[in-house]
Amino acid sequence: MSPSSLHLAVALDGTGWHPASWREPVARPGELFTAGYWADLVAEAERGLLDFVTIEDGLGLQSSHLFDADERTDQVRGRLDAVLIASRIAPLTRHIGLVPTAVVTHTEPFHLSKAIATLDYVSTGRAGVRVQVSARPGEAAHFGRRSIPRIEAYDSPQAHELVTDLFEEAADWVEVVRRLWDSWEDDAEIRDAASGRFIDRDKLHYIDFEGRHFSVKGPSITPRPPQGQPLVTALGHQSVPYRLIARQADVGYITPHDGDQARAIVAEIRAEQEAAGRAGELLHVFGDLVVFLDEDPAEAAARRDRLDTLAGEPYTSDARIFTGTPSQLADLLAELQAAGLTGFRLRPAVLGHDLPGITRGLVPELQRRGLFRTAYEADTLRGLLGLARPANRYAASV
Image (cartoon, rainbow, N blue to C red; front, top):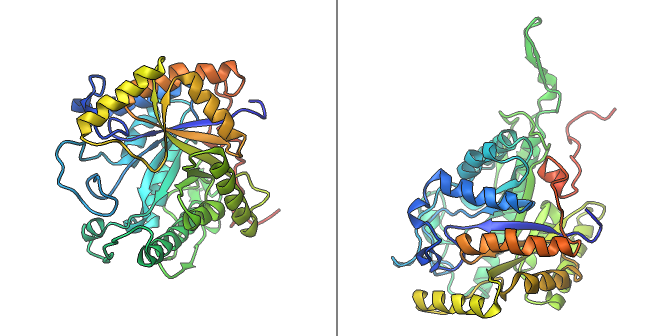
C-alpha cells in the first residue's frame, strides 16, 4: 500500500444501523440468529479486502434510549454473543480481521483475555477486541454485583463522574488483559515427549496486578496469542475516552462531523498519546460514519426517508450520516483523511444493501484513486494495519 492509502473497517450490527433496516426486503431478519447470516456478511467484507469487521454486542436488550431500556417491539431486539460469532466465522475466512465487542464494565478481564487469545489462535492471528463500557442500570442489575445510578442528562456532573470512573476501570481492564497475553513467553511450550516436558515453567509469569478495580495474579491458561497482542480498539466521543484510546488502544474510533472537528480530535488524542510516552508507537484513529449508498444520490435519500417513515421518526446517530454515491463518499473520506484520520469504520444503514455498496462500489472507487489496496498484503491483522508484533514485557532481554 502507498503512504496515502487508507484503512477500512465495517461495523456489523443486527440487520444494519437504521432501526427499520430489518423491514427491508434484503435484510434477512429470519436468519439473524444463524451462523450462516454472519458468515455471509464477513465473506462479503473480505471480498472487498477490508481490514476488519467489528461485531456489536451488549449486556442488555437493545434500546432506543441511551441509558434506559425501552418497550419497543418494532425494532430488532436480541443478539448472539459477538466473541462466539467471531470464533465461528474465523475458520471460514483467511485475511480479514475479526474484532468483537466486549462490555468490560461487567466482564472479568481474565475470562475475556483467554477468549480473545483463543480467537487469535482460531483465526491464525486476526483477532482484536472493541472495548466498551456500560452506564445502564438495567445491565448492572443482570449481574447483581454493583449498582449504577440512573443518569438524567449525559452532560451533567453526575454523568461525567460516572463515565470517568467507568473508563478508568476500562483502562485497568485493558492493562490486565495485555499483561495476561504476555504472561506466557513465546517459547514457553516445549512439547518434548521424550523428556516429558510440555512447558518451561520459568517462562510462565505471574502478572500480580493490584488496582482499584481488579486484583489478578495470573498467569493466563492460554499461551501467548499468535499476534503477541491482539488489537485493542475503542470508540470515543469526548476527552475521557480519548485518553483511553491514546494510552491503551491500537485503534480508536471517533465521530467527527467535518474536517475541522476531525483535526481537533486527532490533535487531542496525539497529545495524550505523547503524554503517555507512546509518541513513537503507531496508533490508528478511524472516523465512524453511517452510510446510505446508492448509485443515484436521490435514491439514497429516498431510501433513508422511507426507512425513517417506517421507524416513525428521523434517524439520528452519534456519527455523521452520509447519504449519497460511492464516489461522493470517496471524496468525503479523502477530505477527512487529510485532517489526520488513518482509516474509517463504516456503519451500513442496511447491511444487505449498504455493505455491498461499500465492497462493490466504494472500494473500486478508492482503488481507482490509489487510496486502497488491490490485494491483501499480510496474513495477520497487525500486519494489515502496519503494527509490529510487540515484544513480551516479561521475557528476559538478551
